[in-house]
Amino acid sequence: MTWSLHCSVCAYTQRDGSKLASLCPDCGQPLMVRYAAPVPRSAITGDASLWRYGAALPLAAGETAVTLGEGMTPMLELPHLAREVGVRRLWVKDEGINPTASFKARGLMMAVTRAKALGLPGVCVPTAGNAGIALAAYAAAAQMACRIYAPETTPPPILGSIRALGAHLELVPGHIGDAGRATMAFAKESGFFNVATVREPYRVEGMKTMGYEVAEQLGWRLPDAIVYPTGGGEGTIGIWKAMGEMLEWGWLPAGTKKPRMIIAQADGCAPLVRAFREGAEKATPWENPTTHASGLRVPGPLGDRLTLRTLRESAGDAEAVNEDRIRSGTFLLASKSGIDAAPEGGAALEATRQLVANGRLDATSEVVVFNTGSGASYRW
Image 1 (tube, rainbow, N blue to C red):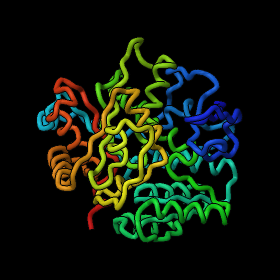
Image 2 (cartoon, one colour):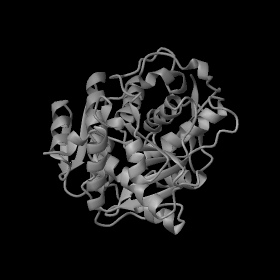
Image 3 (cartoon, helix red, strand yellow):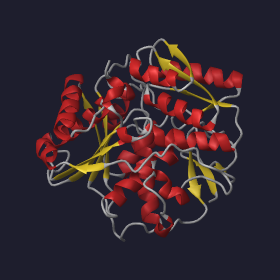
């Protein structure tokens, strides 16, 4: 498969997508992958991993994927939880089953695969937690050098996993924005490639496979809404990209309606919710971000424009959830389903309930809620 890279904001195009790329050199915004030809649904083959969609991923002829068997995670219909939150049907897609215990496995797998193919000396990333585990694991699988910058407040089980996987870990005072600045400085001086969220074009390509899986697991149809806990935005952006590709390539019946994309954030760090409510095209960084759902503690997401565009194109919504309700939503999800829910998943479930209660999500809706990681990473 050949592909090109296109700026998400301006007219910049890199026609040979296989060459090294980061942000748009003209305007500094994220680049997105565009394929040279449609991918037929008949090209979906292989075992139960995201690589069954390999024909729709940026892997050049002769290149080998760096894989740990990620993807094709369970999507469970839970009628009793549907009644609890007030919708007609509800599924939970459990990304905590991935090899590195979160959805981050998908994106970091793709980033490391491309970095390995390009012969780069090493990779680095700022992390609120799960991205660090994923990068450490895939860098180890690729035998690449890896450095990770994480806030000192990152849950200890996550930090322990990063160290166990052999990455060089640096703890940073403050939040992920501070870790991001340290990562950029290190990348500049070392030549390591910074694979932070949407800072390179390939993490989104791994993330989009969640959208393919939702459609396939529903028998090649789409739900009315997808509720996704969102920090940096790459999961939401990726799923929406998959929806467009599936319709363009004929994977779905003609006339299929795309789902409403709904994001959940913590009310102690909700820059995207605030921007969406204000009708803004970009988010203003959140001051003094606080939430125990560390994956949602992203005060200034680089993917803000793309995420907000996704919400508006899909007639979607954005909801903030307070800390007590995140905790109660996490317990409800885990205790009523057997899913080892992360607090981000609890935030998504509670956001669904809140939106139904205030009339912003119809009670007749069929909804897919994402649990983006394993709760075990947060308990100590």
